Image 1 (cartoon, rainbow, N blue to C red):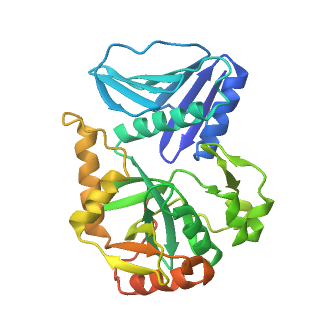
Image 2 (spheres, rainbow, N blue to C red):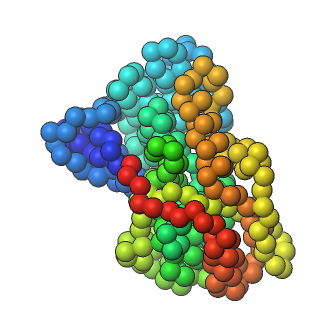
Image 3 (spheres, rainbow, N blue to C red):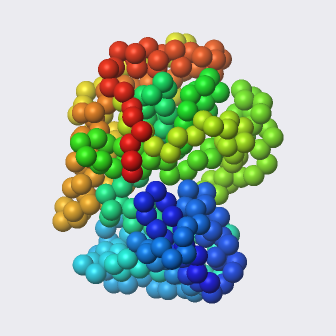
Length: 327
């Protein structure tokens, strides 16, 4: 079976023989804004999936955590995520998915990370950030998954803000500008968020990349608010704090740069051209958009509109306006 998908200006050809594996891959791709495309389009990448085990090659280790291992040599790279593995050789990505593991989070995480690595080689860099637009100006909330990004972002959408995503953006250079692109349209919220957002209780599906969270289909709850891309004019780094009054603290460019790098996929390979391009993009981003640390207390949820007022006040001081930028 062969299916063509498009994401922004990129084209992916998915090939496989097992329908269950293809269906799971289709679910992950659609969740990350890959849509069925023209079947005669020329693919940038070909993804082939095999229901099989495969041992890791004896290549140098580039990056390693408890669940993830990335190996690389001159001809390509090898990604291991739990029992699932992906091998990239040029424009071909081969996935080895042991039978029965295609429904596990490891397959979802591994495939998303492999796609991120392919996009990274094109100069599109993944960033743990939420994206918003208010009156033509873009805002990125950058931070870890436990920093409150999704909850704060959803609260702003309820106040009339437009959104790119709650957790995953891709940033790339377009001329002299840095542009942020949504890598996921639906939100992932903790079930306890229904305490503040009652409509979330109607969401029954779970987020593919984190089954502990609800999949909030934003197109249904907040139609016509989605924007696929923006030019960031403000960077916010939220941190949960036990304080009565939330506040914004200006950050120096050097500190904002370090925080951006921590929130991106930096692998530490000095000989990797993509690594140097990533650092250039992050450097341009901190020069393009002023940065603030958000000390986020309970008042941001207890007093609806408080965060919107804080960010609107900062944005009003900026003369840099977001414009619709082509990918």
